[in-house]
Image (cartoon, rainbow, N blue to C red; front, side, top):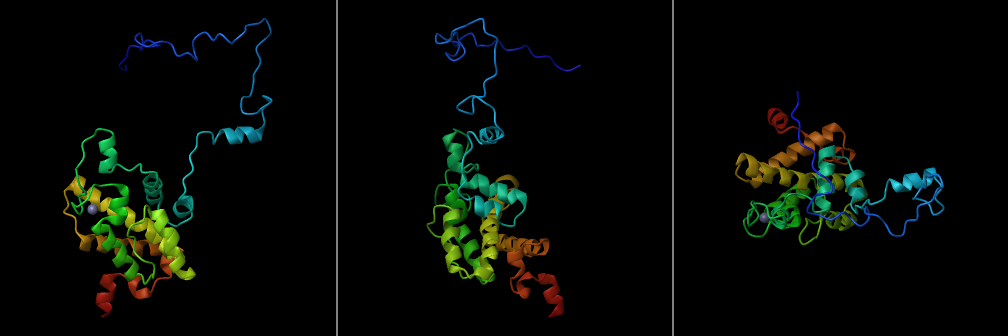
Length: 236
Ligand SMILES: [Zn+2]
């Protein structure tokens, strides 16, 4: 038999009843029968189109939808970017705004306050990851420096990237921030010391796996890059 909890009194005794629920003075009662009124159209008549529009009521626009949802990446990576673009990841600045326990500086570099922009773009740790990954894949786009978001960097980076490598650039734009985020979390939760060497090895491994799994952009990378290092050693 489950635990039973007392039902809380509503409205709370120490709060007044909201005006919208209290007796409204502009409502006139009559003897006419009640009728349904559809509030999503001006004339109160239901339509399928208005019903569809109503489902988007209160929705927000994510400006990076094309990068997030039109690129090849596992769902959890896309979801991370969707949150990061809305500054909804639990970085130190966000924890501080909510009065929660947080560290004063970035855990990877210990040089600046931790924000999502710093962590995935401006941190020296992140900048090295971007620079080495782009160079390794022979993508001529500049690494992020003072860009406000991954989306902003991607928009101008793709202009300097040949069309044949733009899909690879999109995958890199999603993969590198995700791997930095995971690396930082390994430090927080597993006490693993941050290391750019280990981070870059993991990024390269992940690129090989993504290429095998089917991402078209990364499949076009030079074959030696995508080959398993162990196989290369045996062949050599
Ligand atoms: Zn940092």
